Length: 267
Ligand SMILES: NC(=O)C1=CN([C@@H]2O[C@H](COP(=O)(O)OP(=O)(O)OC[C@H]3O[C@@H](n4cnc5c(N)ncnc54)[C@H](OP(=O)(O)O)[C@@H]3O)[C@@H](O)[C@H]2O)C=CC1
Ligand SMILES: O=C(O)[C@@H]1CCC=N1
Image 1 (cartoon, protein in one colour):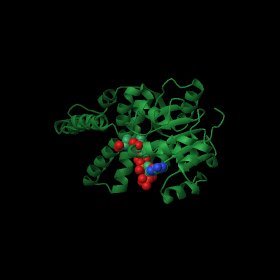
Image 2 (cartoon, protein in one colour; image 1 turned 60 degrees about the vertical axis):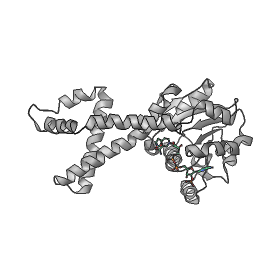
Image 3 (cartoon, rainbow, N blue to C red; image 1 turned 30 degrees about the horizontal axis):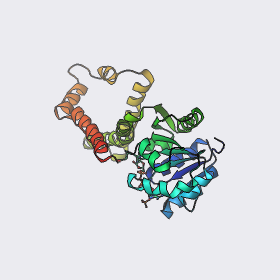
Image 4 (tube, rainbow, N blue to C red; image 1 turned 135 degrees about the vertical axis):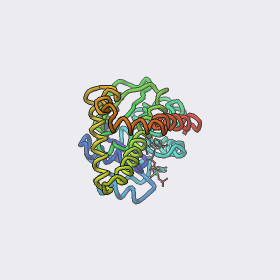
């Protein structure tokens, strides 16, 4: 691929976060990122970062060799119809749209386009995303570029497309599940004496530490938990009470409910 300029179609929560992460990463100069969104407010935020705001989606695709579609599932078909006249075989089409498969995207865009399904999470703005990437017989050169691009925005894993719904739940929704844990722990912390700001800082840094213990050692969480749970101690008393109230079970059921929602709606 000759043209390594990047397009983003839809600069809402995710498209905007991708633009922010890309600019921070220095992978590409801000003016070589081309975006469109019907919301003027979103476009102005992009302009303030030095990103190039286009008049429409077709202009994005005309300028960019690789473009990321970040619109809601019910807008994807309209977007593809709009950009079709600019879709030449040298373009790389990346969709982050949940629940819309490569087969469906190929039907919309045509056989000769290199299509990737990619599932990041909102931490992409901080270059801390976990991004799952599915390829489908794409050229090695295209695949290498897409992986290199998302490697600049966090960690990437390549997965078979059949796991994309599971990836959406565990990584993209997972950010929200983890934040809800933080909020709940904070609420407990406030009741036992901390102000909200201090409760937030202590909880967030503690979660970061727990995460690093797992990421840096590769240990199973329970191995690290064993080091905290003094016999007849404070931690095991709290943990067991959480389990009596359904902590693990409710998390697992939540993950499955999210997964079922994707499967059921296809969106
Ligand atoms: N939010 C997340 O954490 C994640 C989301 N995703 C996927 O990313 C996609 C976007 O989600 P999210 O960013 O949360 O949604 P948002 O609604 O925040 O962003 C989508 C943006 O696209 C705009 N838009 C609507 N129609 C068009 C169009 N024709 N051309 C260009 N832009 C358009 C919307 O404008 P308007 O509001 O005016 O319609 C909006 O600003 C979804 O498909 C979702 O499944 C994937 C991973 C994580
Ligand atoms: O909740 C949703 O549908 C989107 C997809 C993954 C994260 N947000």
